[in-house]
Amino acid sequence: MLVIFSRKHRVDDKQAGFTVLELMVATTIFAIVLLVLTVGVLSFSRDYFSSVNRSNTQTVARAIIDDIAKTIQFSSASLTTGDQGSTSARCIDNVQYLYAPGYEVSDTTDLSNHKSKYGLIKRVSSNGCGGVDLVSGYTFNATEDKELLGKNMRISALSVTPTGDNVFTIRVRVAYGDDDLFANLNPSDWSKMACRGGVGSQFCAVSDLSTTVQQRIVN
Image (cartoon, rainbow, N blue to C red; front, top):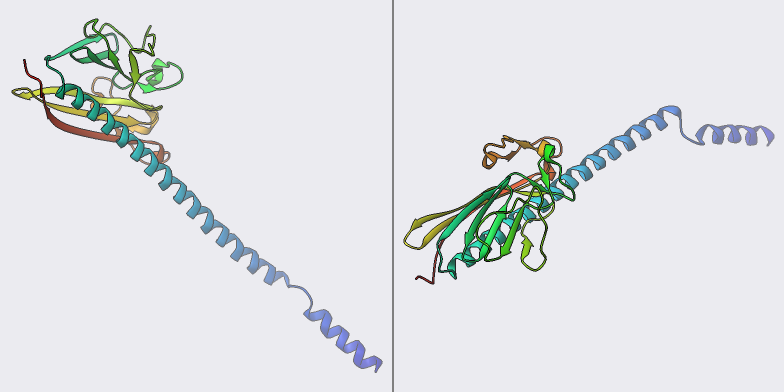
């Protein structure tokens, strides 16, 4: 009885626990599964942020173009333009659209990285067109002014062009992201800005919209 008990005891000892090889195989499988999950989560996060930023940028561009279109529709005056420093202006009646082409809306002004506290201001004022530089010495007036861009967005192009009798074509191009995320970053022609792709591309978006509108009120 003692011999049988001893042999059974030795057999049980051999079957207890995992061998080194089994542990190595299990660890390798776990590492592969973890790697696949990590890649999947990163890919999902990148796609998610890319989709959100594209959608937000397009929504803002559409809101801007709709705002300008409505202003033109219910105005009777012709379009006037003006410039002051880094700011351009498009004015209809007493409504001014003041914008700093290429400047990203930020908490602080950083000229070397094309950042400014304001990017596109809608101002209701009868003080003429232009005369305000959003990048330098501008004071926001909560009564008269409204910022139409979201944070980290910028105007890449904005034009209001007469194309017929009381008919205007409006084009708005809004870009989202920091300077290093764009290709064709040319201060002499901001309209060519495009996301360069690659690392960080989920934090870059461009929306280019245009429409044609006719004045309903004619002198």
